[in-house]
Amino acid sequence: MRLLSALFLLYSFASAEVVYPGASFIAHIVDGGGIQMEFTITNLDDSATTYLLLYFDDNGNPLSLVSSVGTGSEFSESLAPHASRNIRTAGTANSPAQGWAEIITTSTVGTSGGLGVGASVLFRFSGGPWTGSEVIVPADSARNNRFSLAFDHTASAVTGLAMVNPLIDPIAVTVTFRAEDGGIIVTDTFNMGGRTHRAIVTTSSYASTANRRGTIEISTTGFHLGILALRFGSSTVSSVVPLVSSAWSDIANGCPGCWDYF
Image (tube, rainbow, N blue to C red; front, side, top):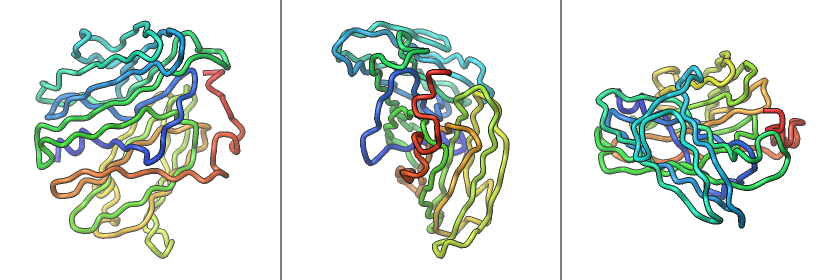
């Protein structure tokens, strides 16, 4: 269970993740305790660019990790057009370190245009019932503030959920579990400070969802929220793809491209 509590979840989109200039996020990272990560940073542009990869803990403080490019909480590099960089964490610590990551195209911070740097992270399991499993997660633009995710907690399966508030202002987050008929199983509202991270195993935090199926609705009072989710079976792991209505999108909520003030 410690391994499951540490990983807390990663999802991969069924469709392509759009890369925007400025910042993107990986809403959960973990290293150690049977988990190793490999980041791939890719310059999608026809011109060279510089990126900055930053690791943070649950409270938004720098998180130092041992990796193939050294030990620290940040790494910066210039990439040639369409070049990529692979960064592997050690994954050897007995106790896992967790948090979230941010990828910034440094030449475009504070501007409305610029280059596109894409990122993904591979999580490799070497412990627990998922030994040998690998999950690849794309960086998230975190440009939405309302989501719906399917959950299925039958046959002892559980869903993990990780969230990050990537901006400096505090937000309130509401999580509502609905049964297949749309009725509410349980709902909860909690605060997240600026730049903070929260990760849960949903059946542990919300016991009434065990042996149930339905959807998880997540919304926030802020403009943006980053989310990762996985379903853990007895020996397999599958991604949970968030659904976002066009009425909930960043354009609809009145903040298109608002990384300009970040």
